[in-house]
Amino acid sequence: MKATIHITLKNGVLDPQGKAIENALGQLGFDGIDEVRQGKLIEVALSETDPKKAEAALTDMCEKLLANTVIENYQIQLEDEA
Image (cartoon, rainbow, N blue to C red; front, top):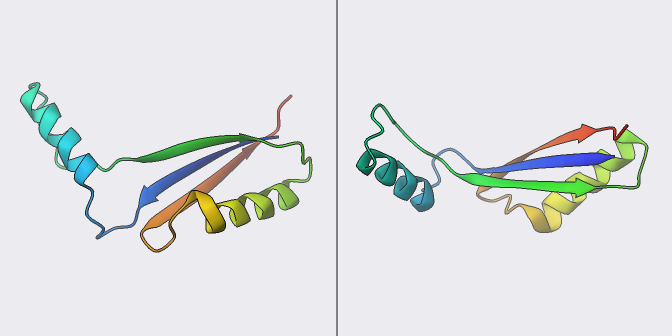
């Protein structure tokens, strides 16, 4: 089973990297950019075949290590590898 975890800053949390990207895009001539927020994408290959157990394990990983839940949100997507 394969999991993709999207980690983003919560609304209201300053995003200096996103602001730097936004400014660079403007300097490169890209118009109409209102806001850029950057995040992380983590891919995890799991040997677990039960989706509920896999999601529980991934949630535990996010809560303990992968995401700073004070300032970040995370979303988990599971895929069966066929």
